[in-house]
Length: 366
Image (cartoon, rainbow, N blue to C red):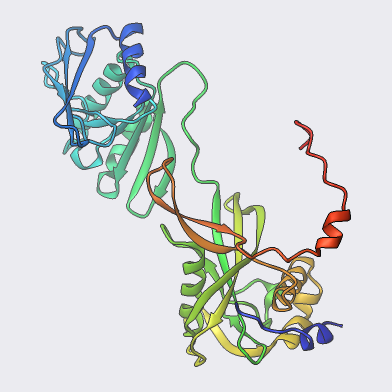
């Protein structure tokens, strides 16, 4: 049956935060007064100066705090008279403090004193959460921070991020990333051949199977560019993005993280194969019908469905999502929005005129 589907397939490529600060100042930190002035009307940097008249339990007085970094966050550089400096940090829009990882004290003793003084000061100022990023070369500071009550949040190859929640209420700091993102490239040429690979290291269920090139998205990488890159790295074949065909969502996959896996249809713009010998055992162009007949496809509901979706797309009975650059005021940056831009099929006027109008969906019925 799948052979007839393939034979008939046609590859058709076609700052509210300022008010919050004032409220905080009135409620529990009367010692804090803020006066901000803009240098000009073009949104250039504004500078804020703070005066503090209340003493802390760990110091006689505060000598200074100053700075506005131009992106909506105040910089705090506070010095105590007992030489215990508050860690340099900037305030985020949620009333939290982000410690400057590049300006930490140079020794553990100084870090311990500054950290304790900072927590005392920020608590009295009504701050909520603290984000402490410790670079790899400051790993000796980790036990000190943990002893003060910091908790691990996430880690990368060059740093550990820790957090501290000050209010006596449930923590509202966002959790660590919950998902990993993978991509697969469905590359098919004009001869209805699919680009497939055999991996050197794979699960027992996939031993000897010919599968699509797959991999993980890198940091700050688009889904479709990740698919193109993975195909190039594993097979040496250059491709261009056509559509995002489908995606799978699974949970408790690796280290109890959830997994998003996107299948992209790609058009080959070269044909010569040169495998990545570190990861790939072999690669080749395989007839689509032969690819679908593989036991690992036929015996697996998910793989069989993915193959069927790809065949339906080739027969123009299914439309995937294309990538479009958009700009949003929400984050002020450029994003990629995936949506179906295909034009709807024209409807027979006589049928449309005799069709009963659809009733609007009642509120709350969805």
